[in-house]
Length: 478
Image (tube, rainbow, N blue to C red):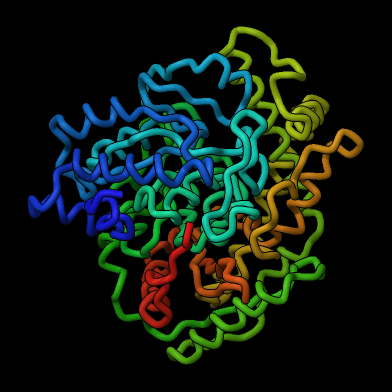
């Protein structure tokens, strides 16, 4: 690699933006360095599946908004994030084969542009974001930079692999059941799932959905600055999180008063959790206690109700059915079995059997769950600490479609991700931090969850943990 590609590889987005502000590098130079890294590293990882380098060069060479990340190279996840004039496949073979350009930006993408980011392409995602791995039949598997025999997680696995390997310092990610936090854990990154309604999903999706969007990054300050740059409602939003009292970047490094923190180090249903994941949560709890916080075993009792998985599954499958309908409308024809993956087709078929009353009851049950979970915080708890995942990063192929058992990948997902979906249903903010690793070097993340709207507290404590147990020097060798 050239010296600039090497010199900037491990700089976070805040430092790369500072280079541009000082005149030590131009946006085009930073972009060319990122392109060089993508071309050198991606053959081993398959993280960046749609590239628009020439368009990015034109953008970087032209006038850029004077936002917080002016001139910083960036990548968009290949899932629902429309960028005007560029294709979006959602990890689906039918859309990959047509590569239809988007007519307009989503509101969030327009905010990424306003922040001065220079988007160079799209990162791999499982088809319609349905699994906690990134192995779509459309594009093939993305591999984990820490060990390429393992998955980077999903559904934002392409973004996580790109950031963890040093291609770009920060990348777009989204989370409907853990899809920011899962790959952040698997790839040793910071992954914040914001509160429902913190960032608009307009104009094509609704904030009352399970999903939210933000980024994966290598530092808490980058995540805080990105949240500052893009947070807030859009036109027509009806779920709107309360605005922060000060910029989120001001929370990083701020004093933290002693907190009451609950610890959950086992599967809420009583199933086994990998010892490394349990140890990561316990170690973080001990670190928080050493900082003056009070930690005791405790978590919302509603998380142990097995009905939650059934309710979440009903909503998840209905969302899959809606995704099929959107794509069919986009293509102007019905989707065939050859267009989509088996596990998703089965979920969409299940959704067709769900009538309006069934769906209304599932939504009502989710409201009950949300209130019950949030009550735990209202009763005096400040944070919950859990492992992010039930297991360290899994080998590639762990979620393969199985004609004899079409829902096998979803059943496998339930054991892998027992800690993340609850907080999509409750709407609360949660962050995964890279605070642990296995003996053979695979990252293991720890999840912190705050009350609704309290990203400020999460970022304050995350900054405290980052200072106490720094992770910036840990880098994969890929």
